[in-house]
Image (tube, rainbow, N blue to C red; front, side):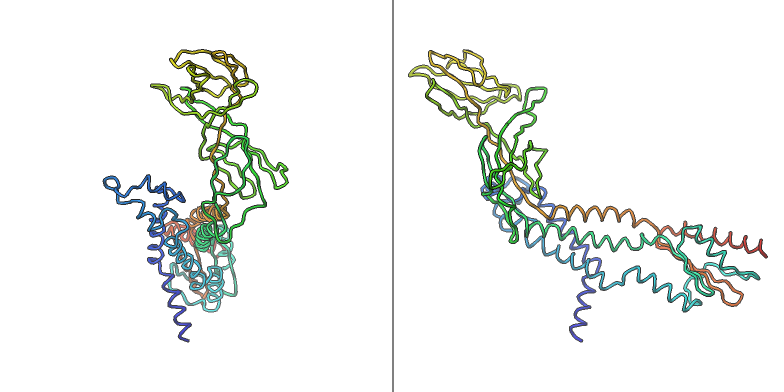
Length: 439
C-alpha cells in the first residue's frame, strides 16, 4: 500500500508541468554550450583556444570546460540527467492520464446512461415536433461523428486536435532516446590520409559501450582536385574515396568534399581538412626525392601558393612554385627569376640537371561517424512539427437529448470558442427552420 502511494506521488510529481518546463530549460542551456564550444576535441585543442587567462568578459577556460564536461555535452551525465527526467515525464502522462480515445468512449457511454446530466445548456426549447433525425443530419453535414441511442444524440469532430498531445509526448520520447542511442552505440574517429594510401579504423575519438564497427572496411583516398573562385582563391577541395572489404574487393567509390559527405550503411565520412604535403621529384633517371611544400599567399590577393627549395649543386638552388592544380608549375632561381614553366611528368634540364616533377602529394582529413540516434531524433522532430499543426484543430462536442417534450442541447470546445458558438447557433437555426416547416 505504501509502495503504491509512493509510486503515484512520484508519478504526479513527474507530471507537473512546471517541473518539466524547468527540465527543458536545463536541457536548452546545456545544448547551448554544445553549439558554441567545439565538441569531442583533444585536450590540447581546448588548452590552445581556452587558456587559463581568458579574454575579457569570458569566464571559460580549458580547466572549467574539462571539469564540467561541456567539451562532450551530449554524452555527459549532466545532459542525460534532465533528459531522463523529461523522458519519465512523457511516459508518466500515459499512466497518470487516461488515453483520450478511451475518454471519448467513456463520455459517450455516460451520456447515454445519464442524458439529463449537463453542466452547460446552451439552448432549451419546446416543440410539438422534435426530430433527432434532423439533428443527426445537421451534425453530419458539419462533419461531426455522430452516436445515437434512444432519445439522445452525441457528436464530436476534430479528434486529431485532441489526441495530438499524445503524439507530442511520443515525439519528445523519440527525441530524447536518439542522443542516448547515439552515445551508447555510435562511434567517431579521425584520420589524415595521404593520396594513394589505404587506412583502417584506428584513431577513435569516442566510442559507445555498445558500439561496433561494420565488417572490416578499408578506405583509400585518391584523385584529388580543386575548384576555384573568380579571384583564383580555392573554393572547394575534392577527393575520391574507395571503400573495400577485407578481401580488397571494391564496394563503393565516391567523391567527398566538405559539404558532400559519403554515406554507406549508417557510416558517414566527412572531409574536415585538406593539405598539400610534398612534391615527388626525379633528379636524373635513378634518383627520386620528396620535398615538403610550404604554403604562402600572393601579396594583396587571396590566392594561395605552395613552394619548396631544391639544391641542384653546391651553389645552384632553385625554387619550385605551384599556384594552381591544373598540372602546371614554375621553377625560379634563387634570385626570383623565372627559369621555366612546365608540367608534371615532363623532363626539363635545369642548370645542367635533368629534373622531373612526378606528382604532387596531397592528404585529406576525414572524420568518420556512426550515429544510429540521428534518424530517431529527426523522426521525433518530424512528428513534433506535424502535431504542432494538428494541435490547432478544434475538438468540439455537441450533446442533444429529449426529456418529455423538452429538447436539451449542450456543447463545448477546446479552442476557437466564438467560431463554435456561431456554428452551434447555425445548427440550431436550421433545426428550428426544419421543425417549423414540418410542423
